[in-house]
Image (tube, rainbow, N blue to C red; front, side, top):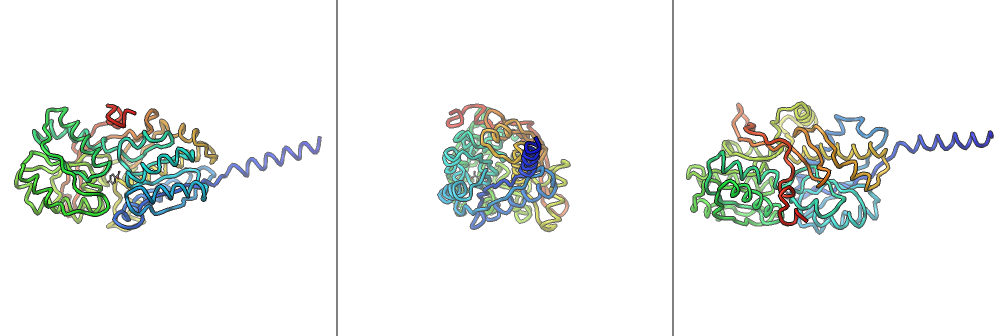
Length: 397
Ligand code: PHB
């Protein structure tokens, strides 16, 4: 009898000690090259979430094992994910700035049976590639499709040209915008592939071709960063605004981190998307304030940082819900229908598609005193990825 009691007590003690688990999470981001700033933004977003929510993990801890995916072609990311799973024994993977990195990793997380939470990569059909993928960032259709409709109905554009970086999210953004625009009676007169994501091309010949065609609207997708800065510069230098061509696009073309340097050149642009640092909600106010305190008054979060924040919230939700014992099916079940009020407003993971549901804002770039900011002009509430809702191409598979 006495012996049984001692055994029972020992079991209880082990159980309570085991309740605090350490969960290993592999983080695959671009920490060098053209995308280095993207990796830093997402990292910092994750860090600020943790700082502002010290109790989010319950008694558990998360160990982030960070790896640099370097080039945006998927090759390095795929190897890293493989190594993280087999060698480092991570229980989840996250990150993925560029779509090819996420696409190349999809079969690995299916075979390795590990949950994967995407923090940027925007090609709509990535989430169709594995039941173990959930996305807290966006699909290119979240911004492209409503922007197409808005351009035709509210900006009075009858004709549009599209310029896009020639890889999966660019092709997606083209299709999304065109579908929305044509659906409201618009006519897409030209679609121009403008180089790849690894290096910033000279945009002049592409933009000159558009200036000569003189469409009412010019919708441009580039993968943010230095590409976006060059887009705004070229648009200005060619005098396209004065020629009557309205530049529009997803928020990627006016990334918060680049906006002050774009200066007056960006004023008046209309963009669609889910986040800018100027959003007026309590979670974003706290996020931006904590960010400036941590990284300097001149530093700003952008849409990538906001996904880092929400992504860390999603990871914490899984860890807490499963008491740190990560089982892939249970993790995916915990993510389905998860709702959170983050810097961009309320988000939810669609239980059917594992993609994000979020408000899409139409915004105008404006001068706010001596800085450049964004003004909210319209909100489309709780947008599910339109590509999957309309079952377009691979989104319908
Ligand atoms: C992507 O590769 O999916 C991607 C990269 C940068 C962006 C948007 C999408 O700004």
